[in-house]
Length: 181
Image (cartoon, rainbow, N blue to C red; front, side):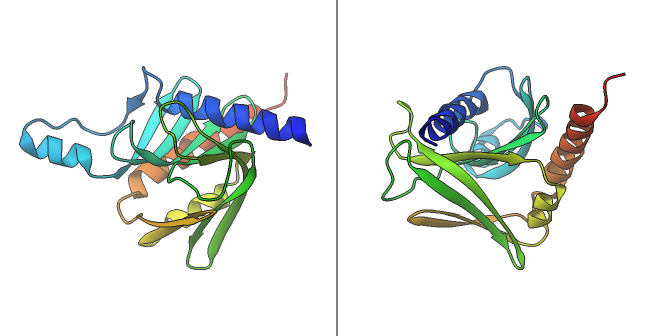
């Protein structure tokens, strides 16, 4: 059990590093001027294609991601990292990430971690990709909960990014399950 927790902690740290990796391409138009700097500081949902697989992120740029989902092409796994800081946890502790939108609820077992760049203790976990998770992105608000913290994230503008992520993950998941022939 301890080795599984250590493996999840390592995987979480690697995912956090991947999310900040150079070479990722966000599918959002670039803006210029003073309005662009104001828009850059405002958190938003972004679909990003990375070498490791498609990602859906919420935050104000790659340095301030609050919630990230990433599909793993070779395993069919969905990795989730909540970077809103938790309370009462130490790196390596087991913890849950809870997501809710009305009657739709999703809980992911994870591991607490911290990095030298972020001193707060965040949580990362992995589960099999389930298209039902994306039902959470219908409505106005997604409630993100980790031990000691809750945050409401606006999702009314997540539609195009969430749909692109769903398509990429569904294609990824079916490719990963395709029989060798």
